Image (tube, rainbow, N blue to C red; front, side):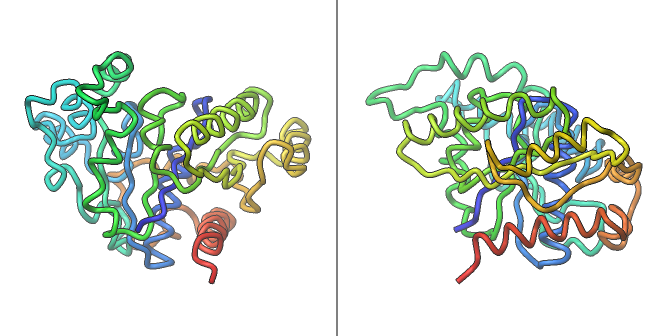
Length: 284
């Protein structure tokens, strides 16, 4: 069974998506893991980092995105979601990435979330809005070593679908006051959710992104995070880099992970992050 790891932060602009995509590509290219990335964020940024915008538009027009899954739950009499056609095989613009698949997102998710909260549970409450994703991917969970989920910047129904199947979750954050302010709320809400669902969801840790060495605020916040009051801190430190912005452009093709993300500290940060996760879940 695949290890399922969502990435969450209530604040936008914290490199949540780039952390998710880079980690997925690292796991496949350097550690030879089979990975599925599920894009639950209506902004579709992870999707467009891993596939052509033109191909995505065709998929979106044909209804082959994750949005169709949730739309179908609102109208169960009409079968629309086809898992086999929605999963995009061997995505990424890195030629050395051979085993990364994608469940693409859609802007249409913006219109679905509020309605999901009001949906009927059906006879005997068999239709639960937070079980939708779990039921959909059940047939393929054995096909992957890891499933990474890029969640929207909230703790609504869509995000809870990701948490429902999670073994643990990651919180990427810029080390400043506004980006870290909501972390205790995330942790408490997830604990409450897990308790109510009678499941275990591990707080894997905080990943510091966009770190500026010359920023006093960043240095002070990093020292505070190292104390691990709210959650453990991953040793990987992602410094602010123009390479990250370039990596978001799918139209540029790369042969290796190092070419896309940089061969120095950025490569080391992704490598160490993946290694920490693998050791945590695969240690004997």
